[in-house]
Amino acid sequence: MALTSPSNLVSPDAGDGYALVTDLAAMQDSVQTALNTKVRTSTDYLWANAAARTAQTGMVAGQKGYQTDTGITYRRDTSIWVVDPLYCVLNKSASQNLTTTPTALIWDVEASDLGGMHDNATNNTRITAPVAGVYQASGSVYNGNTSGLGVASLRVNGTTPVIGSRDRGNGASGAALTLKWNASVALSAGDYLELLVSHATTVGQIVGGTNEDGATITVRRLGPA
Image (tube, rainbow, N blue to C red; front, side, top):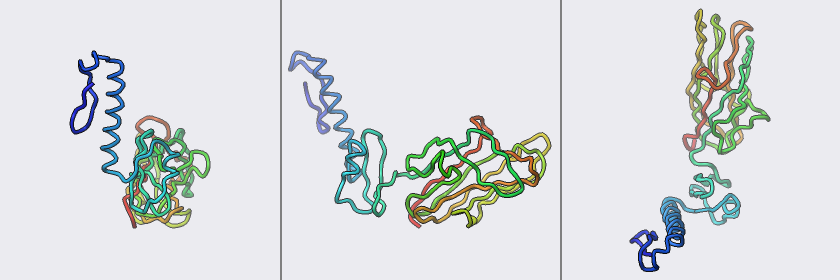
């Protein structure tokens, strides 16, 4: 076998009688090593698995690491490793009835939640910030009611409204009412966001499911507050 320069990739040659099985296995290992080396140059740590990441010592806030078995990058924030970038994308498996009182929407489908910001079963209306920072929330819901006023807005910790997060509109005959939002808010570690929706009558219903009308919300961390 022969080695390339400067990456030291193995390639088959006549030097060992074209022992292709051996050479190809060695080539595979050398390619993986080169890839890991490249990742290592842009991060502070390289781990084979979660156990290695957990056992890591000597790290300081702001450092990054890469876990090879999952392909996930982490950033050190105070005393914990946080997925970088930190975000979640949630949906609803079924429609949810509304009343005239603002009701927190249930999210029970995680399209993505590597950072553990949401739980499909426990407190599933909540999206929780694992670390402090400025978070952006955006999304869209369809209110199945074709008449009357519908309102959507975000709140923090069950009480505090998120500035600029409200959308409202009147349903039109024959067409569902679309509500959208895009707002940013500073959160402390452990704070949680909820989306509240209400309707002027008790007939309103937020559409769930997997078609284009399905409700969705994305929350991502923009950076430190």
